[in-house]
Length: 142
Image (tube, rainbow, N blue to C red; front, side, top):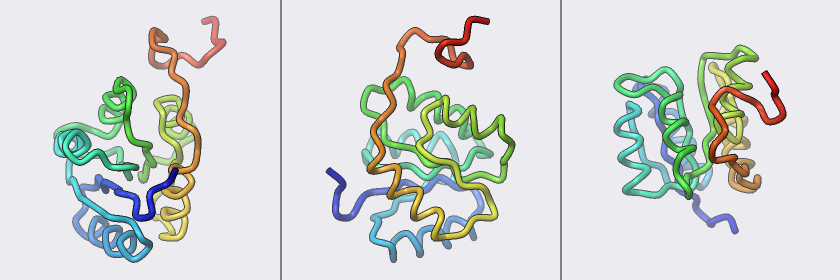
């Protein structure tokens, strides 16, 4: 069941982007909290248990890829929507493989971010293969 006012952690190191996202996501019915680096984000995820995380990849202290890897190892991790200027097919595939529910490229359209967050909340969680090596897709034989 989707909460009426889902909690979203916005992880973004650019202050202006962080502010724009917060104002607009609050207006869209989300309850927001903020983190400007990956280490702070991991702490907030543990403390606040957000329903979904909006995650930049290029972050100080701990980057977004490391945050995704950490969340993948947790049994009850929140859904993640990546929002990044990195927009190659390889980045999309890696984010999906690491458990991201959606990927929005910067510069973004606010409506696309909101739609991706709502979709992440209704999409079923991935079933992880606990001993699979990172970087290998299911069925890949080498």
